[in-house]
Image (tube, rainbow, N blue to C red; front, side, top):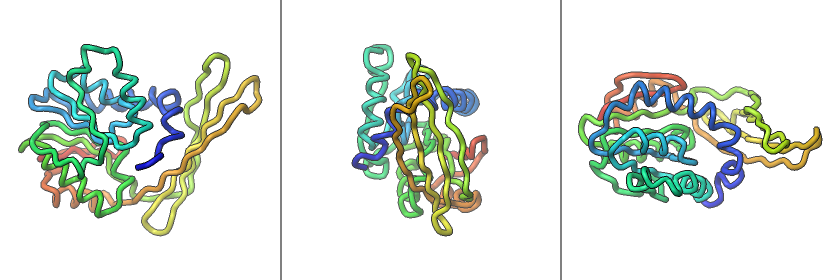
Length: 234
């Protein structure tokens, strides 16, 4: 993945962790249950969910994150927390390249599938199915169904008197792709100190189409949730 997320890794937690943790906590309260084999966290990012999973579960959390910049934040988050360190195993490659088999009865995959084209999604879903034991549960966020021109502000926070803020703009790219531009700003006394941006390309999928992809990979869809969450059983 090279330097992907090299910009976003710096700002992600400060600007987005509060909202992300609220969603993560709600989803885990509803769907986690009590894993007895292991937990698989695909697209672990900065480790927000990884940390929650390790604290809620007594089993190993297998955290998959190919981007070095995001892994660095994840490891910093866990550093010094001796109560969770023995239960987290980190993988630095894509899940479809790891050959994991039967290591978990719960899998978590948010903010990941949209970045994969149809072929890569199929490979990733097959890998998730193989990594889960029969009866294991998958909580996965589907790709967006449409891409419309849009702009929204990210949450802003004060840090030592400086204002950290940002925005994300969405643009359609052809008939079946989407582009997100994340812009981040640091201001002091109303003056811009610096501005950074990073662009991510994604892929669209219909709800029925993604459900069919899950079935083809060996899953049975058992529920849905927000935002764009599908729950499936191996």
